Length: 55
Image (cartoon, rainbow, N blue to C red; front, side):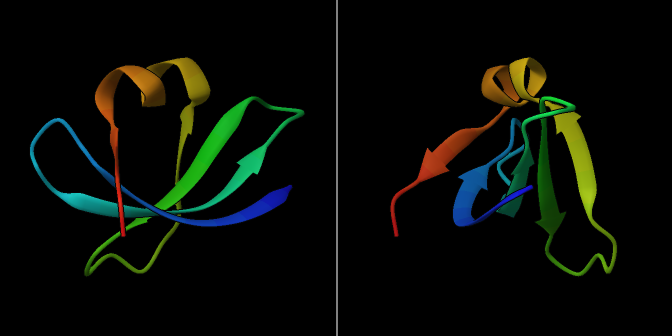
């Protein structure tokens, strides 16, 4: 897994922090604010639903 530290905005306007990318499974790993577990989404869906936020 490639570790990352980037902010994105989802389709509802919420900020998430991308923590990694799993090349083998083609999934983006991210964490929502106030949620203790990692979330995963296929990279194609992530690209459609999230926009990068410049820090």
